[in-house]
Length: 448
Image (cartoon, rainbow, N blue to C red; front, side, top):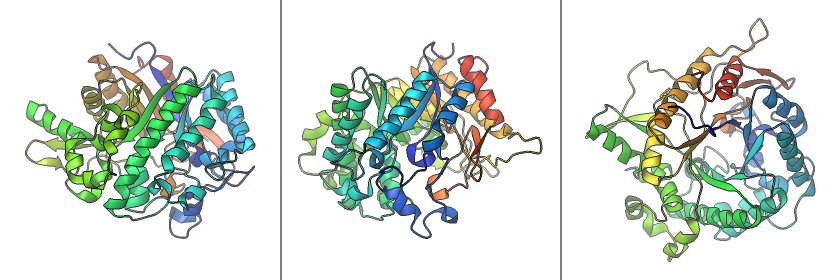
């Protein structure tokens, strides 16, 4: 038994990482524009001002997707491209760009799956406190309403937030990503609540204004893999996957804290014991709003950690394989992570990102040979097929990413793409992995 007949195969991108045109056609600044132009924040002083120039080159990019057999593409919308000040006046040129992109995808037989928030908060809203501001859920609701009305009938799949763990943990706790703040727990926990409320309001607006839509909330975080297949280790891994970290500074990486309110309608008990004092009074009243019905449990998986009963997380042995950006290669993350998500939330599981950074280069023959990436995808997809074969409803899988792009604070150092981008010339070269993945998609995974 393999993947279901209607399995969603595709690729993923995000607005800030590929579009470029950072200050074109009325677009407002985002926190990432500010971060990139702050010395010392991004590797090599790189910026996304031009990026992959997808803003101008989307017709050729969509044509390449079609040629590579892509039928589903996850994109994100730039909030400040649509609402330069975050609220108020709408930038018609920004909406027109997304009109053209979505129409071009549809004309190519590619379904757009749209993420509302992939980290590029309008700078104007950050100056008003960003996600610390109790008004932020209303800002997001208004933005979602603009999007829902504009693309109703053309977009049928939405994700509200991408990886809120990173939004808080990297952007506002350790400061390694935009907006680059290092705030105490008492200030960041309310931000998570504001994101949860913003999500609920956006879901309500999308269902009201966008017609027949499927909606998800994209979590991330390492899977937990049992060190052995004993019931004790499996249970220890299951509990660890959702548990609040013992170190309070690591609280943003708790899968249960982000997923339970959205999918179960309550915060986890261990989370409330540690963090409940920082939630606003009466937060319980918002839980019915936060837990608007969703269509699937969505997660981005790249790696996992081994867990043994009584010992906790184990180190990987010396010489364990790693990707170019030093993440361990752990294919079983897609089996155990998917299994644990379904057991807890009883929703179809959607893998919205999975992939690897590799040391890609154009070879003497003009091609880009990436056998390590092919092997990575092959192993991870076999693990996902194992989950599907055991009856877990796996909804879909999106490879990260369609093409090399601006990789946040790593700039252009890391290459995750199925398509190689020469940033000096903007030439696109499909890697061997793109052709391999085309065959996998065409055969609904039978080629594995």
